[in-house]
Length: 264
Image 1 (cartoon, rainbow, N blue to C red):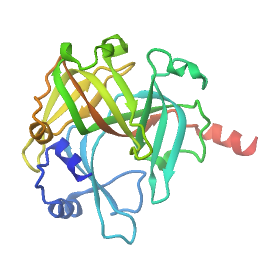
Image 2 (image 1 turned 45 degrees about the horizontal axis):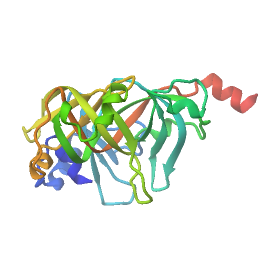
Image 3 (image 1 turned 180 degrees about the horizontal axis):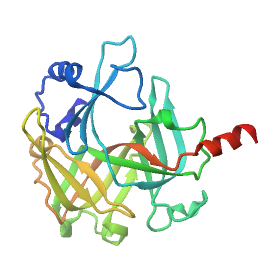
Image 4 (image 1 turned 30 degrees about the horizontal axis):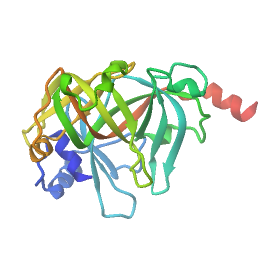
């Protein structure tokens, strides 16, 4: 998914080897990931990072953008799935902006939406979480594909106007659908402009309306240009598929809860 680096100001022809060398020179270790020197981060702008991951005894580095979201979104857990080849990541599925304090079908009442996202600090999670446990997460989306950018009044499906926040958010479905990816139709509330200090190229951070908490998403200007789409503006709408990445910001059982669970 190297093309996702375009979302944070790296051009399509970026030399990844140069970035890996830069990470060795000035990269910072990422908490809750793994052995020092194998999981690095380079800060790019306010909260925006470029992350480098490699498994032990491997020469291959994975590069992904990351945004250290400060807003907290409540999610009622449906499932948490870890990967054998990446024990530091977990796929979280649950109801965002839940309206009840117990796991029930009523989560899907107006306002709540089913969320799928990757948590990059999975080592903080207990061995098991009961369905319905409400976690607080900070997440952001990175555009895999954009289908529409235009005035809110020109939304391809007008039924989105009747949804809370004018937002439609659904996990990608199908047997081959990648985890952590969402189909989204969102109204852009504001745009923050930053600059990538490595390439000196601009980065756009879109704040979009959504139930309970706004969501931040990043898009590639090169992708928009290739697909003949316009640049987003405040008040306009954007639709497409986004990979959501984030971290846990609250809701984990405390030491007292863990002690009760183990010792009665």
